[in-house]
Image (spheres, rainbow, N blue to C red):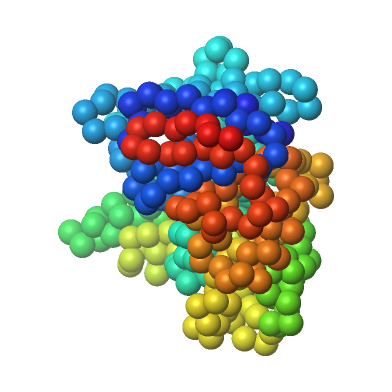
Length: 376
């Protein structure tokens, strides 16, 4: 798989730009703030319908413009797909696949599989559990695009259930009837358990498949620094199996146990949206114990593990390293270059070309404000 062409209209700093790319290595060179990451962000949006930098779509639209458009031509096994996305702040985004409208934007997911490593990924290790849940869910969708629908259904149920819990909380404050609130919530408990069990089972299966790839990737990036490991950490308990009926029953049981606490707090306290991914190095958790260099290596290993897992599934994703080499010392740069040099398509961004190992000097593009030009 590789991106043949990407066109942006009113996306971030670009009023209009088109870039033709080849398989193999492409290096985007430009000073900070020139738009290298904006281009990468657009590709990431095609792959995930989300930005790795901001939580809402509004900042993606160029100041003064009403909407932004991303067009991306992707070649996979000799077949070309054209994905077009229109981002309209405050309204539903629109999507087209091979120039035909699709009912929901998520129907384009799977057209581009991409693994992106960026400086923000340090939050995978040091940040909140939501960062690690997002990492898992994005990879889950990359492997099996149908999980995009599972995520959307689950998020919708949690949102609706939270609204009901909030109403129940306020109702009790003014002397409303508690029984009526419980009856209303009971309808949503089964929806939460059903969709939550499906999402949780997918995550459990994914974490188990990912674990050996992570151990291998960390040892390749930082040899002799200890064994890296991951484990899925669910509020339902330890040693869970990806048995969907059993998980659904467990969620329903826990919902009953936590019902009073949920109404008292006005929010859903049970489900995979409360889970985490436990990261460890040797016998210690990474968060709070690992050095800055170890955290950086662990974050890189998480992305490399995702890349290797997709390849083991027969998927050849586009690999992107956004300003990564500037953060690594010479030995780690060379080790990383050796690990990624055989990628079907590798996109590298840097401020100065000297940051990129010689083995990865492929096509070069210079990036200045609002423009991208190929120079070699």
